[in-house]
Image (cartoon, rainbow, N blue to C red; front, side):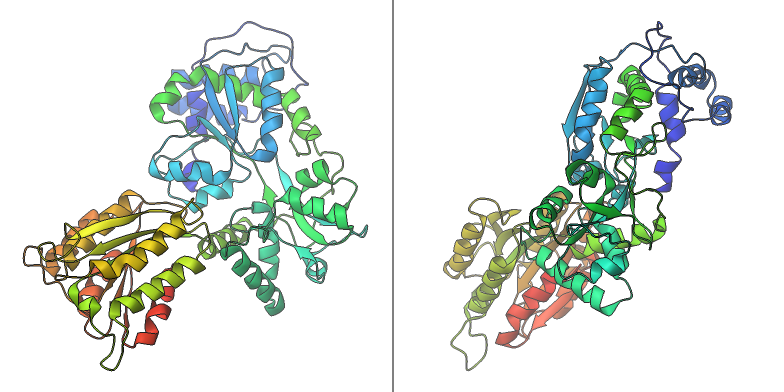
Length: 543
């Protein structure tokens, strides 16, 4: 988690300090030690004034310091709480048991929140992911406020299906049937990825695993519960899952904490509502903090397989463990996020008259036909998670597009119904659109602006600009002005790279390089007909 998130606890305390004193009710659970010390709250009070002084009383009552038997009513407006799938049911039950019906708990995967969090979209009011590491994947438009650094925790453990205990990743990698999750989407799989570092055989095994995931193989990386179910079915195999998932789904199997150290899921409680809504939700946030910090909550979480500060370890559990260095976890998570990041690209294809010319003097294949073959090959080879759109461009007055460019297929995931088919059909139909000059500059800017506007923070966002010539549109901007406008249109929160692909040596490589350099991209030239497919693949692989 970023430093901003770590230092924001005082902000969260100030937010939940404005509720009026409540009438005492029956206690909801055993007395707990306070999450925030008197010293911490005193410092906040000195810095924040009367509001934080009110908070002092609120915090002490909520944590049993002022009066362990005193509870507070479930006050406040409706509030949405997005929770990691494995914790959603127990969080919902905790709130229901406390009589708090203003909270709507939604089962939510991390990427469902990360996208809008990066782009300033619609967000839940509170988010409880399985790991604080998720925030390292993006640059949030508004930094979440940490209400609680950890609601509960669960170390990653090694589980075996054959009745024998595996106490290290070395033993796990020695097994032929080692089942691995997706380190790019499952924090529980990061330990396996970390353990592969520095060992050529293990690294090769993980590379092969990464290739299967990237190919779109749906069974390449099953969930924790899915892998545990397989171990129980075949009574063999080894995998790494969270202790909570093992405790809930496969407690009869043998498990141990890896002696090399383990990744720990920490379940932070983050306020993701914007500042104005936070003020409106102050009383609900206070109620939520009180309930989730109660002894009853700790007991429920522990019974659901999580570790808590108040109720200790679940049953069964693997006992003590050594935590992997957080910096190593963060680096590995970032590496795998980049490695498995899906492609999001607009393919912008030149259909000027020269694209109908032969690709080489002695060739019967046109430049456009080679481009079509390379593009079609890419569309078929990319996994369903890749999102691809198709534009065509030529000079407006002489071309056949009704303008300098036309959007032939909107950018959507290839898994979307009909997307591959539509792309294949439109790529094949490009031959019917050739004619006119090359409106390179205006089209490059328009495509770049469109890609920035539709940016996906969890993907590699790219414009593939494919041309065989130079800009010859008399009404368009010159190259220097194009570069200025590209730089003005760039957004550090929405990085998009233009990858220039020149078809034959006639392409204006200087212009493609200038366009690419302005956006952090690269420029390639396929001088020989047989190079086109390889160049398209290389451009798509660029991260």
